[in-house]
Image (cartoon, rainbow, N blue to C red; front, side):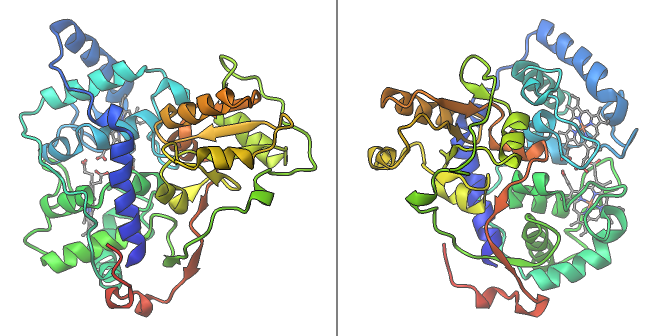
Length: 372
Ligand code: HEC
Ligand code: HEC
């Protein structure tokens, strides 16, 4: 169905956007770094994932030494859960930017250390969406998976496959690989022999279709706000933020100001497709590479209304638009510190692409226009 195609394409874009994270070269750890990473692992992770990374010591935390995970998960799929956590599960975010105890380098080193403990070659995952029949997938899920992952994907002994933060940050091919190959050394079976390729695609597509909640829905294209609607709560007072370094607003403060109905403009500086998927309610899409930036700036209020920019990973694009704003004389501007990843992972609300509920029978691939 169309929704999961969009979602996966977005994962690809995320990867490109956050290239500073994905592409940063993984250099072998020095002995000193390796010892520090091993100590950090014991200090922060062993409690649930086990002294020997075996998993399932507390809260059914998964194994962090299965070849299946490390060959496909390093670093992208390890970084997000470790840095930002999985809201709604016991896995908390460890990155200092979301209140955790670890710096980016410390996390990178723990992940590199985890990988060095296991002898694996990287498996290249496709960024293409997995297309499958979601109603068949729902049946396969109920029959083969619900027992361990929960009827609603809430997680039992297996991970919470319905977790929205997990699904929005995970590529289809990563999920499919885990389903096909299992997770060696854990209870997660390899389904390659037991299910047909068609069934595996179907259950993967079914999981993906849950990314915005555990109900079958279809996305509807939405247009950006009209310029009359750029200012949120025009009649209200401005928020009173204490900006970190004179520039950064924390998610908690922004959330409160939005809930209090304060006057401001919110600019989403990511690729437009990401804005379509999920954005902070009321935001105006203004991709950082957009040629019409000056034209759009003409439509922004010049009376000192606060203009907050945000992006994905977590600030590069937002900072670049913020610099352009300040160069154009908009003095009252701020950048969201955690980015929208942090915002979502911390559990703050996003407006997801408008959807309409559909009956299971209606969700057939053949009903969908080919859009890729
Ligand atoms: C309080 C227990 C707890 C602690 C401490 C903890 N985790 Fe987790 N972790 C979990 C649970 C539970 C999950 C699975 C959540 C879910 O259902 O998706 C998880 C998931 C993960 C995943 C995703 C694995 C996968 O198979 O997708 C990674 C990576 C991870 N943790 C890394 C770490 C690291 C690194 C540390 C230490 C810095 C750590 N965790 C500390 C409980 C914990
Ligand atoms: C017997 C219990 C069991 C069954 C049945 C089972 N799983 Fe799992 N699954 C697990 C466990 C346990 C894990 C975590 C493994 C680990 O420690 O890495 C897991 C992990 C996964 C993961 C990896 C998640 C991640 O974040 O890395 C996916 C995807 C998954 N299962 C999908 C499925 C699907 C789809 C089915 C049904 C076709 C299924 N599982 C059936 C127990 C099960």
